[in-house]
Length: 150
Image 1 (tube, rainbow, N blue to C red):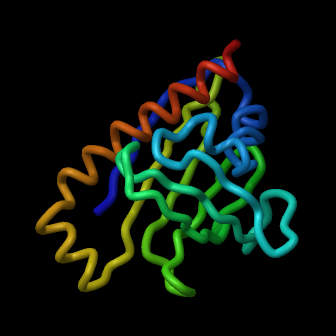
Image 2 (image 1 turned 120 degrees about the vertical axis):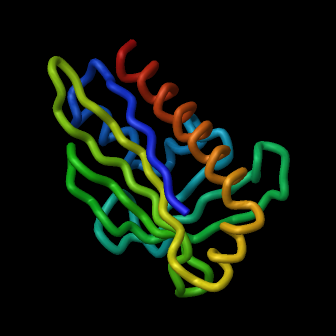
């Protein structure tokens, strides 16, 4: 399972990246993750840094914490992280920023790791989850757009 959404923003990539890569801002933009915090002494984005996000699935529940690890950290260009189940990555999220005209095209994407669980989930609920993720990625990017363009 995977999907992506791209939104053009009339702002420089560095300004957008700074908002996205500071995971403490996540609650301002994400429909499902309402807060996040750096872990293990991390104070900002860096390759391998860990953070946790407080999630309200489908905006109604259940509510739980997920631990994540930064997998891509190129200021002004790329920010990615994997969601961990124990030490095993199960889902990957990524923001790619590409200069376009007078602004930046920002793409948010997710990709589930291949496993028996993800295969079964894909068969029995994956289409609904993918549709939900596309809708939420669109909301997230449009909320970021409103801030960086104001």
